[in-house]
Image (cartoon, rainbow, N blue to C red):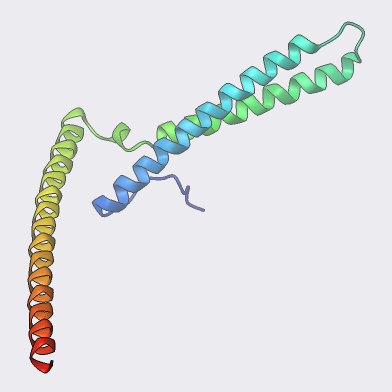
Length: 143
């Protein structure tokens, strides 16, 4: 079974960007979860009372260690699969330049679409005004 986090094939930019952001979100979530695990572990260890069952205490400590190690391995996998790690600095720079170019093109398309929408809105308003005048004129001539 192929690792779902692998970044083996070339994907369309929109998909790749979305996946990269998703990976960053996953990494941030995993780091946040590990921080909570550390905080909970410290709280648990501070609540340990003298005379508690030492066997149970050791089992709980071992479980905490296993959870932390498991989460650390998950974080390591996420980091290893971030896209920039397999690219040279120049390749990363080129990718950023390409993304910036595409963003500028998308911005120009957006501005054009807004201008077109405004033009259409004006045409609709003018058409409605003409229809209202015609209807008003027709209504006045009927009386």
